[in-house]
Image 1: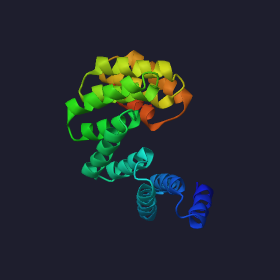
Image 2: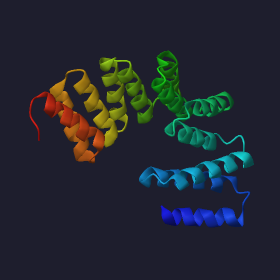
Image 3: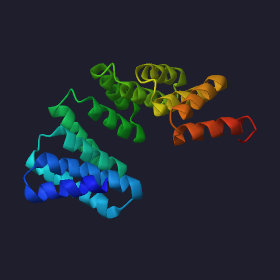
Image 4: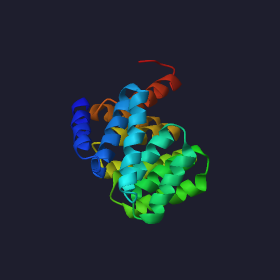
Length: 212
């Protein structure tokens, strides 16, 4: 990651009007912030993305990445503004709907979130992430059988994704299907150890009065 950042920094230094490079650099800075919480990297990510947006105001990828930063740092209104602009100008961008749905769920605006996740599924019906987010919506609404159906479809599309299998296991657990939850969570860990599966598995064991 550090080497990639160095290379892109040299690119934008040679050509400060290279908008795509600024956008990519912003994403890398944000990844660095996610690893160690470096506030300088957070500021650099925003600066790079804002410069990329200045150079190409219509680039939807840059706006969505900026919206992600705003959302992850608690500036939900700013994130929603950016995403609404993207959706208005690029109505077929499914990932903009998914991110907006995530924010709306956090704000408790469930019906609007439902419309966004369903629209994302319509746009990309063969993408596992579409159903993953649909499942998250149903979990947030307490509709666990519907969540299981959505996560199951996501796993059918991406059977080797440990995160998706873990989400299915968590939905089974919430629905009281302990045996199915154990199978899914164990499978998720086999595919790749992940915190989601371990946390849900721990909840399952604690509910059964045993610790492993």
